[in-house]
Image 1 (cartoon, rainbow, N blue to C red):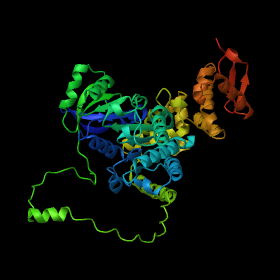
Image 2: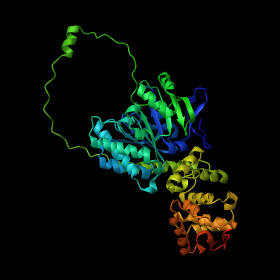
Image 3: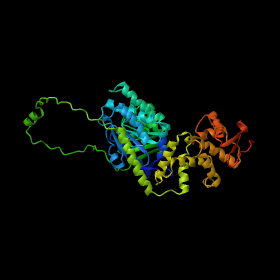
Image 4: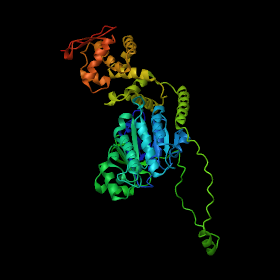
Length: 489
């Protein structure tokens, strides 16, 4: 199973009795698809995953049956009842949820199918359109995803279905760069839009009986068609797991216990008691004519809808107070551990092109996984340390007086220019040639070489460097310490 230096989440056990884990940072980057017929244990699996990660990452749960509202009692999730909100307020709330990093259960239980589609479409669209500064990682769990991303039309209007489907497609296809990690669960793969299901890289496939669903599940797991018959033999709570966050090859996983439960209990057999009423009287009682309808009462003015934005603001304030209290009770990491935590947050190949807020949230999650407060390092200090690590400076050299001076000078520059300045300063300190355009572009977080070259001119105008020559013959001098890059060979 996949492993993580900071302790993966424990899902349950494998067929050999070993612990079955899921790597949360990898899951955030690669998304998850859960499939299984009714009664296979999908909701139990989702609840287990949500409980294990509730204190580590922001969560948004799209809940069509009200099964997950009980999470609010233990983990302080904000429950939003969609039947009391307009589309405009839900769209605004989706954006505010990202800004406040609020964990939310979107309860659709009281909404009609048409209203459910419109509510989900509006809310996810608001989340998707949040400003770049708020692209923090967030797990978005969609139960019964075939309702919101159907492969064919149903009883709802084309407009509502299109709104919901577009939002689900954005979540699974374009959400990753915005920190939105989709976890979609469905009873029927055959009813789920293929472009939504195809974007998941991790799979948990439960008990399935229909041939068409077994065939699609086997294709996604890379199994032979004849092996798909095994999906019929899975017990409740057993799933075949595959993916970079789960396992390299399909493995059977039995999901572990959960701490919370749905308000709606499952069906239970009860002894059938015969009524103590004669059959003739029972017939008259059941077939009795309905009473005459009462006169229609005067309609009272509708109660004002709950102020959802005020609820989000109050949620954010109470959460910040709790986090501050928790951080005071937790031990601070040693410098080596802190350095490792920051380095891990920026180790992905495309991390240089991700927003700083996303990387910082990833660092905070890793800090919580390691047992520390998420607020052990403010964002400006995180950016400075991350830029120092990326430019190749060791922790010992970063503590030197010379590099501390460089960091002080960098603090006077715009935030997006500091990584480029650190890269140039390190090359000049070591007496190496000036970094090429590709290295400058990566440090600046762009794929445009021309834009990267222009940063050198900007740094010279800021009196941070002296630029000599162009192209391969370019040399840089760092104003202050006087370091210079070497002449190209």
